[in-house]
Length: 104
Image (cartoon, rainbow, N blue to C red; front, side, top):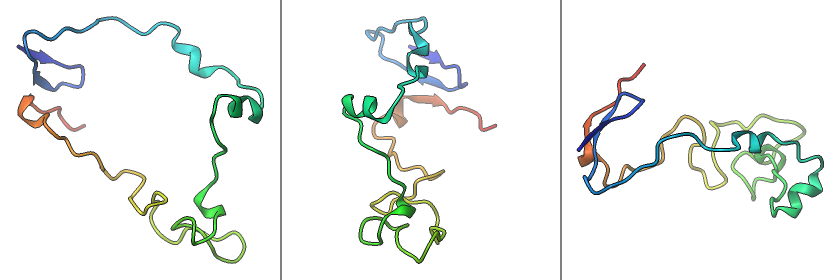
């Protein structure tokens, strides 16, 4: 069977596959104020530290005297480009795409 997605892409789907149509309930759940840093810690979320604030041994953006710029394009702690660069391989989906979505 062929399905036209909202993005404009037409994709092949196995006839036996099922899908749920509708919208997720309680969609504003993620907009709640947590209140304080400790409340995030109770949820097991650790503090977010910027790469620029680290030492060069910890992050590619680290080091420098005072507040210095990263000195290179944004990267992850392992050196992979972080913004705008596609890092995902499309694995087995290519054969299932009949018509790609149109670029805007």
